[in-house]
Length: 270
Image (tube, rainbow, N blue to C red; front, side, top):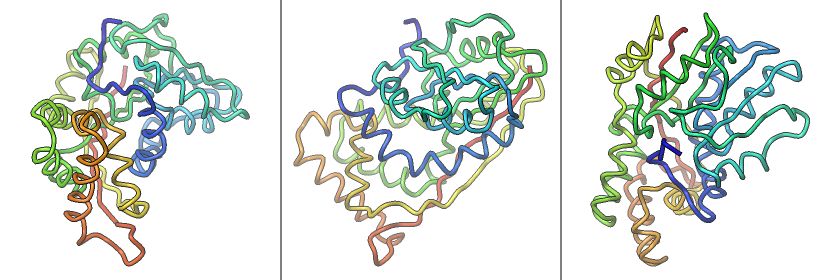
């Protein structure tokens, strides 16, 4: 595979990703689908689909006349995505492929969607050129990448914890997750030949599960805690407690927290 994305999960991590990342992914799915005016019967590509959050929602919108292709370079993520695919919308096709070498003919799709994947592409311009190639004339692309971490208290606190408890490689991996700025997205649209590009901020307030359960699971579900995972459960537990402590001002009596998360939502037309 030519596109060895910076977001690689192994072992049981994809299952944890599906469970623990869902609360912060779900609130943005409808915004992505709404902005591309997804319609019944549409042909959709979910690029860097992960465990299939967007693919499942897109399948529900396009219905049996439509078709959803879900692509990811990570075999483990695709395995979880296929297992979670709703049986009443069987027309989700899961394919292992890199974003910069898609196995589809030109002008195949009405819509291309990519939720929280573009920042991990080794070559964003090449990936978006491929997205433009497989889009039909007039087709729409929408993608999200996290806004600067300071706009999301959870990510800001997590970064501080990783700096203290993790390795330099963990810290660098975390920074890459927030490296895709609005200017970079706009420039990539132009380089790929897409037109009418726009980028704007979307914020959602997320009520999390109880922090003492959710934070350790989420910490073990992302690639920028690798050294903590490899060091064993004691270090991960200490780091998770430290993160919970930093979020205490957002915590409710029942242990949940209400946290704002902010993403960049970028769209363009073929």
